[in-house]
Image 1: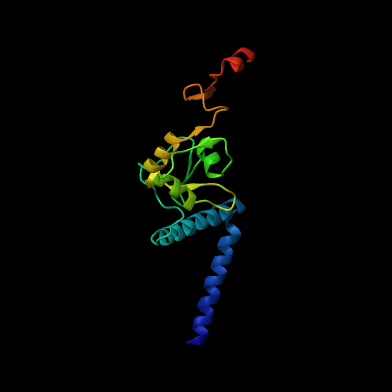
Image 2 (image 1 turned 90 degrees about the vertical axis):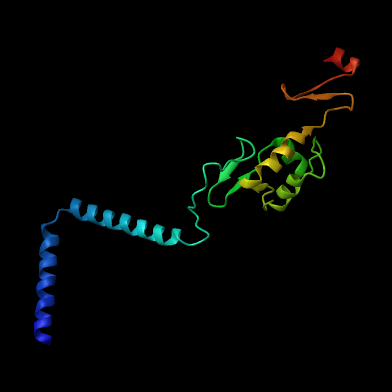
Length: 163
C-alpha cells in the first residue's frame, strides 16, 4: 500500500511538472496574480466581518461640517480646517469663537500630537456651530469683520485716510 501511494505521488508530481513546463511564463504570472487577488478578497471578507474594520463602509450621509474638512474613512473622523477655529483652539490670539459650545470641547478632546483637531462626522452640526461663531480679531474694537469679503472693515477715520 505504501509503495502504491509513493508511485501515485510521483505520478502526480510528474504531471504537475510537465504541466508547468508547457505553460508559458505569461500564463504562470497570470495564474499567480489571480491567486493573489483571490487571496486578498478572501482576507478582506474575513477581516471585514470583524469590528474595527479599516475599510469600513461609511453611509452616504457621512460628511464633515465644512467641505474643506477631510473625512478619514478608516477612523470615521473629520479633520478640522477652519482657519479661525484652528487659531482659537491653538491659542494664537487672532481669532475668537463663542465660549461654551459643545463643539469646542469635541475638537479639544480629539486633538493629536501635531496640533490637528478631529471630530466624528456624526457630530458635524456641533462643529458647524463653532465654525459659524468664529471670527478673526480685528485691529481695534471699532473695526468689524465682514464675512463676505473675509476682511475687517476699518472704522477709524484717521486710519481710513492713511489706507
